[in-house]
Amino acid sequence: MSTTYYSEEHEWITVDGDIGTVGITDYAQEQLGDVVFVDISKVGEDVAKGDDVGVVESVKAASDIYSPVSGTITEANPALDDAPETVNAEAQGGGWMFKITLSDTGELDGLMDADGYKTFAESL
Image (cartoon, rainbow, N blue to C red; front, side, top):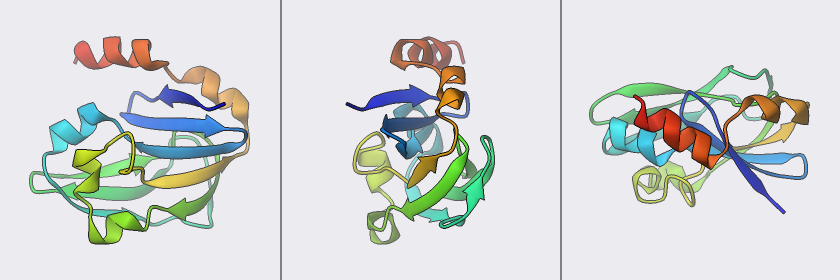
């Protein structure tokens, strides 16, 4: 069974065992506008929670993507190379950005659940 968590940097992570799938939230993609490019630069690398792992660019701005947990980045979403707009259409589905093998599942305790994130986003 998978569980989804949210960071204050507007990333979500859905965890199944020790594998996490990460993307940006619907709120984040709305703030960015039309996404035109996604680059995950750290595939194969070990990263720490909060590390910059790539960038998402839109017609309005470029924004760093941060890892919500520590671990090894195992995959970038290949569909985003040809269709970065998938992030706008399916931010929390087909628009996922990378997968990570978690090195410390205890870090998930510092993230928000869906209700907590909704309250956080509404306060901005």
